[in-house]
Image 1 (cartoon, one colour):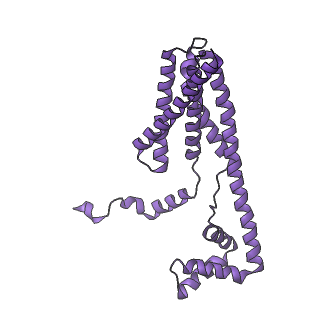
Image 2 (cartoon, rainbow, N blue to C red; image 1 turned 45 degrees about the vertical axis):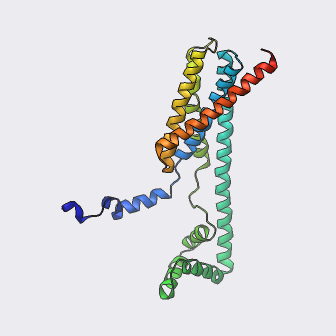
Image 3 (cartoon, rainbow, N blue to C red; image 1 turned 45 degrees about the horizontal axis):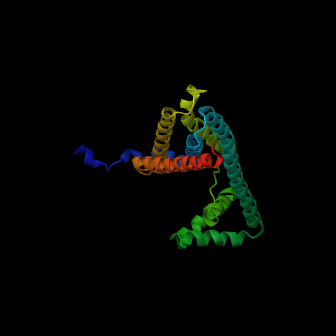
Amino acid sequence: MASSDHPPHHDQHTPAAVSARLAAATEHSHLGDYVLGAVDGTVTTFAVVASVAGAQLSGGVALVLGCANLLADGFSMAAGNYLKARSEAQVVERARRAEEAHVERVPEGEREEIRQIFAAKGFSGVTLEEVVDVITKDRRRWVDTMLTEELGHRLESPPPFRAGLATFLGFVLIGMLPLLPLLFAAGAPLTSGLFLASAAAAGVAFLAVGLLKGRTLGEPMLAAGLETLLVGGLAAFLAYVVGDALRGFLGS
């Protein structure tokens, strides 16, 4: 009966636990960047292997094209994510400067905005005025509140370089898995056995990344894993069909 004295997960709602959880919520996790790169990297490299198999070219060709795509596309995707994160940070900084100028020029108007924001949340009367006073007493807190409540910005933007690096690492480290069977059989023709080994490695990568994606997004992990496996398999199938069509076009 002693266990009924406390609700389930009571230890997760102690002051220390709540404080730690709220602090963690403001930090950017690069796991999503890594998963994004890993999915795209695996699709890209196995699509190369599948298209080469469809065209009945050698394993060496698949290895060279796969490695070239792995590095070039990985860098391109990482650069894109870097620029995206940097642009988001610049947007927030520009909005901050604008709000600071508004607070400086028309403080009463900005106070009224704070008042209406929290009135819409259910505050009223003396309590509402106390909330407004507390927020507007600190210039930094005042501007931060306008950025989040009025403009909907996140105050903590992901470091652009880390976002790009996480994407690149995910792309290269996981995307190289479909190429490993070809690497260990360098110079050998792309036999059906090698292709199946590459397909198996890609399948494991798709499933593992999907499970990780599910955990990251709070989705059912098995469903997310199977979904990623299905999407990756479809991409590989389309690449194989294109390669087979090009083989006929080239008369090889």
